[in-house]
Image (cartoon, rainbow, N blue to C red; front, side, top):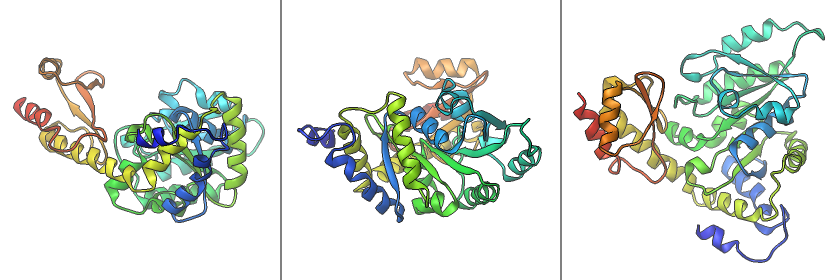
Length: 322
């Protein structure tokens, strides 16, 4: 909020302001490599514009069948790519497996009658809160580049993944073959706005293309400096990682209390637990809120403003269920 207030002064409009001009340098320092960085209004726009930069209308994007780009973005990737196909695959914990991707690629004939794969998209952390390790990302990155494909990472919870592993952010991105990262901010404490980060020798060209997609899709704000100011406040002093660590710690506290109810390991800031309808009603009667995840299950998400102490009442309530 302080960064937004500090940006409340006359300056050039759209993306010509002093704050936006600092993004490349700030994110280059964060990732220890030259990058191009663009502010984007929403995660859906970030993912979809990234895929449009990697995949033509006649191409396909290999992704998990439960990925956010498939299930929760109302066809936006198809809208921005002008019709590219999402080529979905199963996988435990919403993770793409290298062998499954390789097998899928092997089935595509090199003729004009089939959709050619042009990109791979993975979610970090996944829709079930699991984290791709640097080696797992690198294996997918190597496979992608061996086949001439771009690799996109939906990093709505990228900060949580980095905090969970304790690695350098470069180890999960460009060093592992990621071409474009959707860098999440709002789920990590930002008010509005995300970032697209472009790596590698094609970064400048892809970023320039993304700028046109951003304008064409109605996402070029005349006061973009407010988004840029938030992103700078996130990354310049390590706030992005501190926030993620707090959320992860809260999730670990709840995970310990949930014990045998856990459906997946707790690796970031999401938990999926088994709850009967009666147990869910009991928790809600005590004032707790969470998302029903099908019959007999619930999804709990901790946020940047929480820590292990702040979720202790919920942890105690989970233990009391027995």
